[in-house]
Image 1 (cartoon, one colour):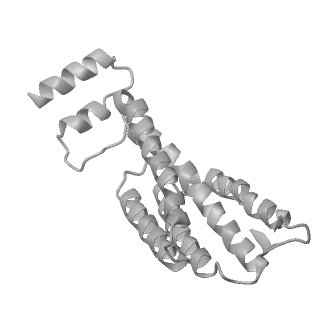
Image 2 (spheres, rainbow, N blue to C red):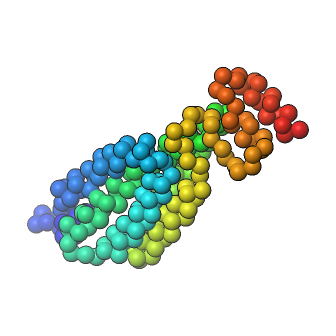
Image 3 (cartoon, rainbow, N blue to C red):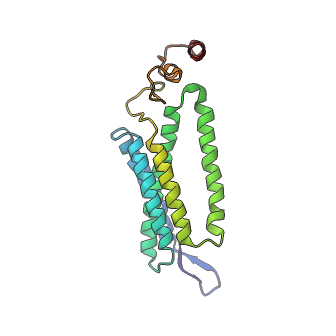
Length: 198
């Protein structure tokens, strides 16, 4: 956040480091909210709420980009960064918990790679000749699509690893493999899963 978007007397751009520090401290608040909510409320509802609020705050930030009030921009940036940090942390928890052991590292790495791809493409959206209000609308839509997808994931609160149902069918082989007791060896689980598929 620049103080007045102008050069100082020496021809250098001035930065309001107080505003930058305040907005960056939002990550601590977002992480604290996640830690308090994840075992009390669950994973899905806080994640959906954070993504929804992230879309709203991103849109508000884009629409108020031309505002002269540094403190308004700082407050909206603080709220945006707070919910973005919270939603990111929750997704790291959810992804690890819903995937079976055989897919956990691959699925988690793939999810992370897609997130990094989105992070790499965002600067092109911002730096182009696209008006900020269109960027805000795009961010709003992306956040709500993500919230919709997260809403349909299974809740993992109070469940052990390997007890997550990924489908609604009772006799699905995928459910049998995922719900297998943790004392069963990987070989036995794969053998049973393969025989169920045949």
